[in-house]
Amino acid sequence: MAVETEDVDADLKSLESRLDTSNYPKTHPLFSDKNKKALHCWKNEAGGGHDIDEMAVLRPKVYSYRSVPNKYAPEQSTELEIKLCKGVNRKAVKRCLTFDMYKRALMEQKQFYATFHNIRLKSNQLRTTEIRKLALSAICNKRYWLDCGRHSVGYGSVEIELFGGDCWRCKQKDPPAALQEVSRL
Ligand SMILES: [Zn+2]
Image (cartoon, rainbow, N blue to C red):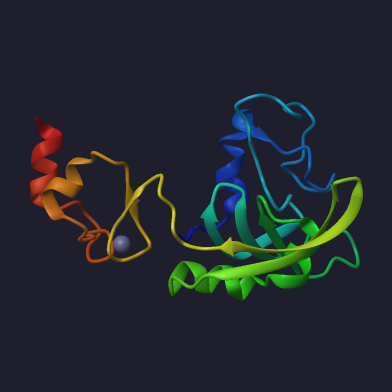
């Protein structure tokens, strides 16, 4: 996904009532405390001081992105690489995973493991166990993944019946005639 626009802040300005921009730098024109923690409001993951450059999202709460400071960033801001992986110890995420791994998991269907240690009480003795856990994988069984590996549809979607695993989104912009036909019914 890519956004093409002259001025993304101007675009967002028109959606202001639905945005929580309380995490923006105070000098940013979109900064406002009005919707702080308000329900059903969108928040900019990177705050207004950084622009997301590249992002790889594998599953809910499993994603990584690179962001660069923009003109509203506080001084001494540097490029950031944010990594999140639900179910894996935070220190292990920091130590074992890189943005490129998230990207390769997504684009090349590769899998990456994280290794970390846990201390557990077993028969009244403290034991250290080493855990090796599948951290990154593009396999998501909550959706029906098409052959391209980039797009998915919900189970039971009419698209599966019409095209099997073939992805039209990767080949053309508009939905194929057969699909338009069905949505008109
Ligand atoms: Zn596709």
